[in-house]
Length: 323
Image (cartoon, rainbow, N blue to C red; front, side, top):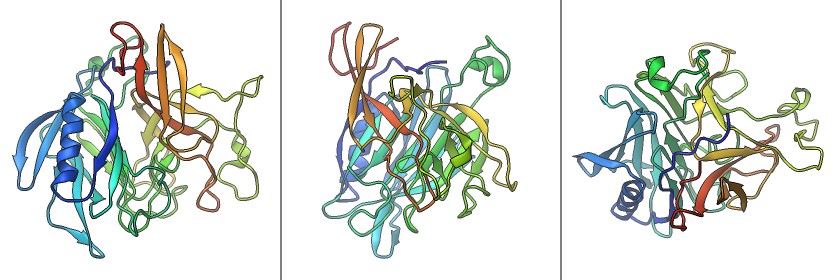
């Protein structure tokens, strides 16, 4: 299928997390710069909306509701359908003195986390990572090759995940599954975490890494990374999906592909970068997920990379207009 390029602006940078005023304000500025619109205000917050190149929309609530966890105040970030009657998981982003976050946003998605932090607490607390957006729908996703997304009757399709508050949950910052704080929706049918600790038995939001299956999530074997003949990693499509949360050992279903992203089939350091050439443009990719083995028996077969910028005609500069 290949990389799904939105051909829209990618906005990256550091946002302030030191107060309930600065954190939402910087999130708002980044989203608006990336093409999102502010559709209405709520008490101490706003609702934002965006639409993918396939005309699929989503709304996101960013609000300070005055909540705190173990003395740490946080804002709420919650994805939902356009009608706002099918909300997803209410993610938490803790603010306070000394806090700041990296944020990468495009027209279809955004990712927020502190620099260099993935599995550990940040300044004594979790609640530091939130990501979500609208996936790209490949033409043959529903088994009907050659059809465009609107022909499938897709009126809504989105996902979200985060680190949660009760310890740092598995999420796309530290692996290929989101187990403790996630949600996903197709046509306003929302799937959401039920708090199952064993992500191999309970449903989760997931990416689909490429690896040999005999050593999957085993503490006895080194993960088998798939490589080319020259020992270089493969760059593969970041397909995304989830299981039915009300079924034990439910099959994982693919609901789309993350825009402006790819998977590298080897561990990489957080925020490390590399470039590729795409139709005469130099694309800079930044590693969003960590690479080393985590969680004891949790192995990491791939690393998620996001577009940081594209330099090339027309006009040059950091803009995503490849393909």
